[in-house]
Image 1: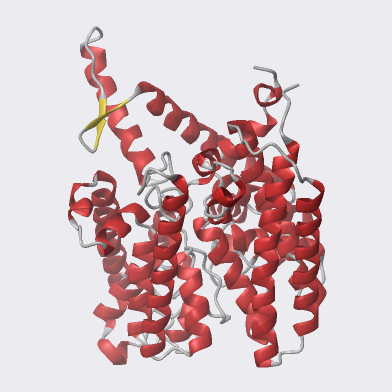
Image 2: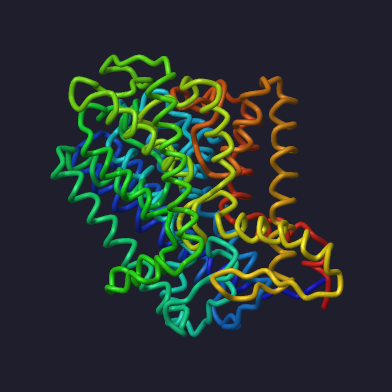
Length: 503
């Protein structure tokens, strides 16, 4: 069996727990400020987490400060599980979610930015618990692993292996030759965008607490809300929904492009092939959805109904149809999962269209889940080029992406990813159906969990939540969330004999 440097793995788990515990203490301060009655439980959760982190760091003193690729995969996967296990403590010790299964599900859904919830009445929850939910999104969005990389040089550890294993998408673009500086730049950008959205939402009329929470959920493409009706609560305030739509779009864009845009270089957007397809498809899908909603959708327009298209008396049915089409297209494609309306009652055509969108994902290098546009583009191009290769079997016909040749190795890797993705989706659906769950709910749960979307179909539609799943169904859904968030290979490779074999 391959010899692993388990000391460095435990050392890094300790660092992650210290981070997690620190954020719990911040939530404890929020509880103290609002005097919501759960301050002691949250501070206790933070103290336990920090104590375990310190113990792990203490018992692994003198470790070899070198991490190899295999250790990187273990650190990422175990790190996510460790964060989710410890992150469940505030729910359990505060009494907000007494069931460990439900608490773990809520936490895994938070860190993987899925946004699926088991809470039946969100608005009666203590504010600090709602803040902690949003915080798990925010931490998971860019990746707690990348955050940890920013301080690894203090320990004399290089972190490229972990960044390659965790970074969203087929490749990890670097803003700076040193991976540590890349992580710092990404986090500064991430924080700045979150702060900007929170300020704009507050100016648009949202309360400051709601604004902060929704900003954290938006930039992480998570979807946890502080309201039972999600963003439909503000259906009479279109500006709020347009602001969130804009930042969902930004969150689904490659953060490297956003970084250059902040520096004033907008040409990167125009030159990037993935961004063009991402932007173009959103326009096309929004137009289609708008027309269908306007002419065919039979929906309620009651102000209190989550199914509401909007309030036609404010800007009229045309604007209302466009706004909700745009919002829900972005919410599903970017896997944010916010809800302004129930798309499953917008005719069968739109239900199927939104289900298909769960497999798109946004841009590589974004906080979104799903397959990602880059993979779709390369697979489609390679598929069309097979016709040309059939006519010219001796010719060299490479796939080009962003005017550069894509190696066969990358093409094969993407094709393998897509096949594995579909296989896991099928198996996931079968497992849900084996529990006695109906067809629509089973395929919706599998697609939504694996794609980190949140809202699904059937009994898990946007107006429902995941509380109705049996206990094993919640654990299965959480596992699919982990697979999807870490893009399959990072988790699955650990279960192969090659990973543990001497090489």
